[in-house]
Amino acid sequence: MQYPKLRELKEAITALIKGPYTTKFPAEPHVPEKRFRGKPEYSKDGCVGCKACAEVCPTGCIEVKDISDSEIPLRRLELHYDSCIFCGQCQAACITHEGIKLSNKFDLAIFDRSQAIEAVEKELTLCEGCGCVIGANDHLAWVAKKLGPLAYSSPTSYLSALKELKLAYLDIKKQEDLTRQDRIKVLCPKCRREVTLNT
Ligand code: SF4
Ligand code: SF4
Image (cartoon, rainbow, N blue to C red; front, side):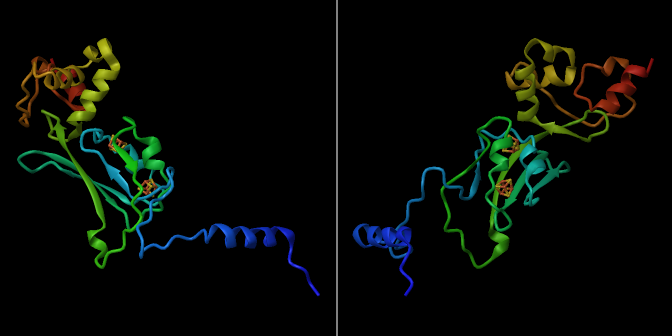
């Protein structure tokens, strides 16, 4: 006759006294443990739109959509949580540590998978020369703040910082034939090089 192992016997007696480890969800609400990794959620104020979370996501479930032809150019980050593996890499890589956090939400079943989207939108800064995307306004301001006085070495950087402080008004319009006097403008690296070389 085979005797039960002592460990299993101990577990059986503990379960008899304390009750089962499993919860009664969905009959009763379940509160996950503190460090539970549930649905990732964006914070509109904490996110600066740098897209680092999309770069590190191992499943590629964060889609970055730059809509530059609308009246207000926007970057939209769409997290398709039906493909998320809740690894927490997005939260770990977030440059502000506040942009995206894994919540304790776990009951995510829905009938239409296309609705499984968590999104945040950020206004974009476009190049005044060619109109290409330079980055999200908040990201440029965040970088300028990090750089401190060094931000004044680049017009794109300090104009973004001054705009954030409401000390500069940028009415960005695409302008071809840039000359040297257009150096103090928000420009992408390619246009800045051309402006610098133009005499
Ligand atoms: S938790 Fe992991 S899989 Fe889910 S969005 Fe973040 S990085 Fe991607
Ligand atoms: S600030 Fe954080 S949440 Fe926002 S795009 Fe960058 S990494 Fe993602």
